[in-house]
Length: 102
Image (cartoon, rainbow, N blue to C red; front, side):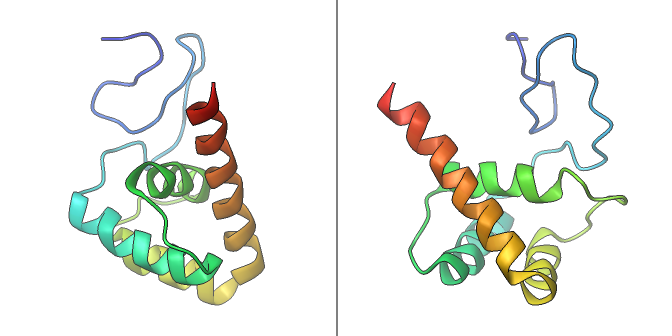
């Protein structure tokens, strides 16, 4: 297992960091595709798989319970806190952009 990648999860953490994220799992490509559309509409531009995955990681990090169906969770999050979700999504896009320019 490579340094920092949690086996079977989607979280990238330092080896010494312990995650208590109950959603540290791989989401299906179908879920990611649907989330890309939802978040793309929210931020007003299309986003790619990596941007969507990072946004999902940021958005779901604070979830208290396991997320059963990611698109429904994201849709509800956008509906209840659009500015917060748009801000988190834009942060994910910035993080991805930084990794692509280095």
